[in-house]
Structures are given as C-alpha cells and as structure tokens.
Length: 474
Length: 136
Image (cartoon, rainbow over all chains, first blue to last red; front, side):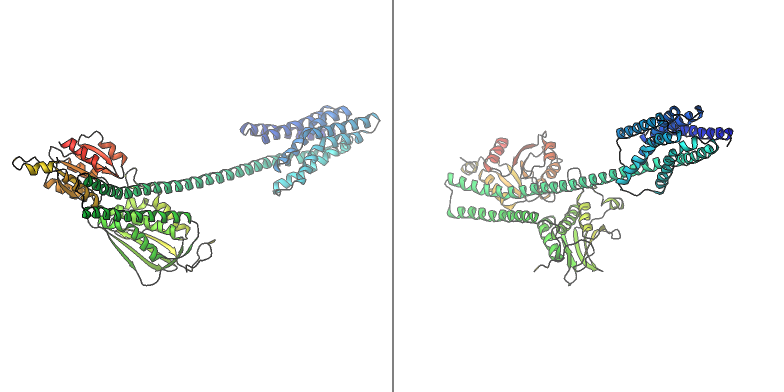
C-alpha cells in the first residue's frame, strides 16, 4: 500500500474521530450527564494515538508510549460504559498500576534490544487492559441479560481491544498497515453508532425504574391517606355518637335530679306524703331503667368494635335489616316517618361481614331520614330480592334528588349538608365496603324517588378471591 | 310565704301570675318542671316540641319560655327565632340542654332576648332563682 493510501486512511480515521468529538460535544451540551461526558472523553482520547501515529514517521518507543496513553484512557472509558450498564464499579488504581507495569516491562524489553513488535505488543496489552478488567467484572455479576445492542457493543469492544494488540505487527509492515487502519476505522464507525445507543438505553432504563418507584411511592402515600381519612371519619362518627349519647344520658339524669329536688323540697316544707315519695321514687327507678338500656347499647358497640375483623360469615340479611331499623325506630316514630319493608318469604342469606354491612344499611337509613325529615310525605321503603347470584337490597325514600346531585353523590366529601354536619364520607365508605365484598352500591337513576341499591353475593357463591372459608352460624 | 299562698290569703288583691311555657321532648322533665313552677306561683304551659310550643305561644303569649334545644320538628333555636318574629314585646327565652350546639349558641350570645343557658343535668332551684330574679 502506498503512503498516500495510508495517509488517506489516516485522514479518514482522523475525520471520523473529529466528527464524533463534535457530535459528542453537542450531545453533552444538551444532556449534562456523566455518560455523555464519558463518550466525549472517549473520542477525544482516541485523538492522541491518531495524532502520534500521523506525527511520528517512525515507530519507536516514544511515539508508542504517548499514543498508548490515549488508548489507555479510551479503553478505560469503553470499559466503564459497559460496567455502568451492569451497574458494577471497578477500582481505578489497580488498572493504572497494571498499565504502568506493562509499560515498564515494555521498556525493559526495549532496552534489552527486543524488536518493536514485541515491546509494542506488551505496551498495547497494558493500554488495552482496562476494558478487559471492566468486562470481567461485569461477567462476575450477571443480573440482567444484555440487550441486543448491548451484546453488539461488547462484541465490537472486544474486537477493538484485541485489534490494539496487533498494532505492533501492522505498524512495522507498511504494506498492510492500511488494512489495520481500515479495520480500526470500521470498528470506530460502528462504535460511534452503538455508544450513544447504549448510553441512551441505559439512561432510559434508569429513568423508568425511578418513575416506577415514584409511582409506587405515591400510590402508597395515597393508600395511607385514604386509610387515615377512613380512621378520621370513624373517629368523627364516634364523636357524633358520643355527643348524641351525652344528650341521651343527660336528659334522664335531669329528670332524676328533678325528682330528687322535689323530694328535698317537699321534705323541707313538710309536704311529704308516702304517696308522693313513692311516686317520685318510682319515677327515679324507671328512669334508671331507661339509662341502663343506653349503657347496654354502648356495651354492645364496644363488643362489636373489639370483634371487628375481616371475617365473613353466612348472615341472614333480614335480621340485619331488622336490627338496623330497630335502632332507628325511636327516631322514625318521633319524626313521623313511615317505614315499610318488602321481601319474599325465602330466607335471604348473604356471605358478608355483618358489622360492616350493618354500617352500610344504617348509613343509608340515616341518610334517608335526614333527607325527608322536613317533607310533607315521609316514607322509607326497604326491600330485598334475589338477582342471580346476588342479593339486592334497596333503601328508597320519598325524597327526590336532582340529577346534578345524583351524578356526584358517590364522590368522597360530597355532601349537601351545611358545614359541620356530616363529612360526606359515608356513602363513599359504604361503597368501598360493598365493593370489597364483591358487590356494588349505586343510586338507581331510573327511580323517581331516591333509591339506593347495593348487591351482595349470596351465600354459597364465592365471587371474590381470597375469602375465608364459610363459617356456619349454629 | 309562697306566692300561691299569698294569693289564697288575699283574693281581693290578686297578684298577677306570670305565665311560663316549658318546652322539652322528655315528658318527665316537662311535668316536674311545671310542678315546680306551679308551686312557686307561676301559671305554666308545656309543649313537647318547638313547633307546638310556638303555636301555644301564639295562642297565649307567655311571659317567659324555658326550652330544651334538641327536639324533633323544630329545635329550640328555630322556635326562638320564630318566636322573636312576633310583635314586640319579644318573649324572653331560657335555653336548657344536654348537648350544646356551639355555633348556634354563639350566635345568640349578644341577643338580649336570651336570658340564660343552663346545661343538663340542671338544678330546678337555680332555674327557679333565675326566673324569679328576672320576672319579679
């Protein structure tokens, strides 16, 4: 090969290096990441052997050493790009020492009169070694498989590293030096395509993983917030219940107090008669009975709370609804609300958590009561029927909901009550309870009046995965 | 000597009997309070909820209303608001309650027609003293 061809090829290699440097610089300007910076340094480092190759006409130890420094740096970077993908790190110092050791060895060979090929080989091996160090480190830690482009990159990088080793052989044979240069050119060309691919792929992977983690974190945050809200709403309703209880107890206490004051008053004025004493004492006793019914109710609530679990069992829905209605009976009577129930003769057994479903029914009932309390025509109709493998329970009242409110009624925090009365959480919580049973809770939009419907799987159908085994109530 | 006895002693000079309307949804409290005030020489009327109380007040204007707050149909506050739309002189009201509704009570604090607030359980003696103090 003529010198001109060699010069031309050298010029090509140089031009390609130059283009790669410019492109890498632009990319680094855009994306100031470490990976882009490394790619830039890689191409710049390759300039050194290219320049020394062009500058030094004769191959000698000096030129070889200077060029090898650039090669060492570029090989180090090539290896670390690979190691980054596999997320391993290799210590720098041993590699530098290894390189210097090889150089020293080459120097000794040079001094002892070895041919250029021999000490060039030793020096090249030292310069190329960093890539092999990194590569071996990644082999030790197989975590994910390489993608196709990553596999190609490894292959080309190995080819390049091995090609450095034959540099000494080509350098002193000008007739085939061009071949060596062409091979180098070809490899660099492929590398200039592969390297950005690898870098981008990896940064995309990293970003996806980070996003995935962020999403998971946010989801957990939301779940936690939801749970906190649920707890707060329970506390709020407990607070309301406590307030109601206080009133329920204060009223009979006042009555007892008045009886006692009367007895005192009569005694002071000498107006006591056995009959009057008996009547006041009787009054006190019957009031005490009233209060003990309240405390019994409270004890039951405490018991129920203690036994709250996710346990589900076969429950007779009719009993459940009866109990719920009973609890509201006094209120219903007072407000003059007529309550009708409608269900067929069949036993209506559902598989559910009775306490939670009670809560749902009670909530629907109290919503209805609040809604129709001021209307002329007040009634509530509770009906149940079988629909396929579900039991459908509906609570309908004489009130009407306009369509705008109807579309939003299941929203958490939506309430038409004034501030301070009702959190607006009840329906959405009830909805979650029913849904966790594998059912649905919805407003029947086809009914003229306000009609809420929920479905529960019937006893015997296990729609939801992961339910406990049925326990029979004996 | 009690007012009632004074009245019996001197029929030619009847002391005007003040009329008190007692409103509470609990029957025992209504009756016992009414008895207490009758013994004190007041004329009493009772009602079991705010709306009935208002109707009775319209029919025969009381000199004072003693009312519970939490009641069905109309609660104590609603009854009072309606009562105070009638022509003057406005009927003074004493509230008694086992469950203080903070906001609404605060609204009424400056109102001269609200004479007092007694939480339950209450002492008849204190209530009677206040009424005596106000009306006599």
